[in-house]
Amino acid sequence: DFVSSILIFLAILLTEELFKAVYLNRRGYRERFHTTFYGLALGVGSSSTAGVATVVWTALPQLYQVVGFMVLVLYSVNLAVINADTGALIGFGASRGDLWRSFEKAVGIRYAHGALLFVFLAAGPYVPDVLVFVTLATALAFALLVYHYVYTTVLPATLPEEVQREMRRGKRRARTVQGRGPPGGRTTPAARTHRWGPGGRPGRPRGRACAPPACREMGPHRPTSAAQRRPR
Image (cartoon, rainbow, N blue to C red):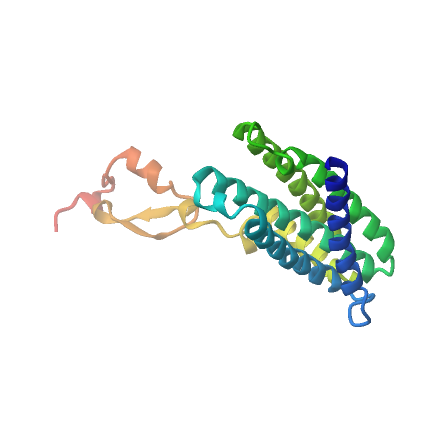
């Protein structure tokens, strides 16, 4: 019945996250900073397996329809992003020696994501396609929001302190260089001025003469001295 289906679905999500926790809690991954990145990759890999299993077991006929294909693509992207999120969280907990607290967060995120997918999972023939697409888009937005937190907070925090200091130092140097402009205080080629020689032809760049656009507005060079007016 309906309640049994919900319980089975929750048990499947719990089993997936428990597999990640057991795998990332092995001796080779425990309290190592790169375990977070392994967890992210593990989540993406497990999502591909779940997506293929869903298509083969329940939705193989819909794969050859345009609407069904688009729905399965959105569902696969949802699985990939949310599993990457929870894998990174569990890996971060394993790298810090605090696995089970991160595991609880990951399970809570999967349950919340599953609740957003409820309409899609329980969709029958009378559920409009628009409602299915809205449900998948809402769940994907939630998964991307969690991914933003993982990308901006969890992944940088898992790096060693020396690497974080070097990254902050590099950002400060980049901001300093951008604030000073070109190195050495040199002007750019567009800002250089020119000396105008006989015949109105520009010579080599020099000090503080008029810039080429301004000189073009002033018109061609006019000889003023007697030596310049004398015919050759």
